[in-house]
Image: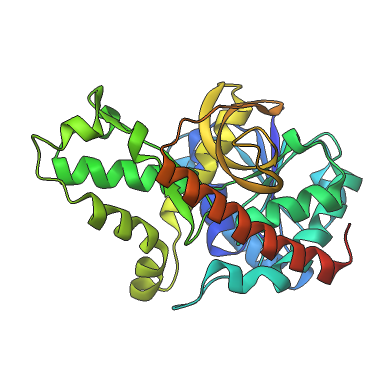
Length: 317
């Protein structure tokens, strides 16, 4: 029996992840955890999902709950609870209030699901990954932030659409902060096996425009429809399935660094990592040019400063 739990299951991200993951048919049970006052809504979500899953003959069990005892035995516990961004807000604006939520849930996970992997989706996700690590007491390999996985998928999609080729031909990655200080690794991007710097000699490609589109993607969607949902939900469920199936794929997730990349330490940032059923098996070495290194160090500085403020506010060492 494969069981996962979603804390914050009635929110836009939480319920979409639950439905997307259930459709992939890789889990036997999803605990739809919510606050007591939202339990009826969680029940309603499960009823609606059951109707949809019946069309696919999928028998995933959906358990609405507000009892932490029900998360016991989970392979993964996703923290998707928190205050969401509104138009014009930066992810770091959410740091203090969301840190209190993530801290509370992380302690409960360590108590009721000590063998699980904690997956953090709450923004600002890099800061929240460190909060979850410090308050849960878990090994760093078992606390993973969604990080730049969605950003990497977005950039891959932008290249694919602008050149009009299949996205499988684009190999690119975004690291650093999941926010304004994200770092697209253009120096190592390839299209059809051809390095980007050579590919642009033959194709009209607005790289500067793509990068700006990438950095403003979340706010663009929020300004037009109020929230991001499908992209994050599919990225998160994709990451969860990678863990559950022990796929050993390299995905860009937020992980606490101890000097593995350019000797950066004491901060959680988006980096490429080998993902297995045990969590982060290895952080993959990165080749960066001088500009990318400078941007990566700036991301580390920004996120570390924000994290220190949050940890001090929570009185966490």
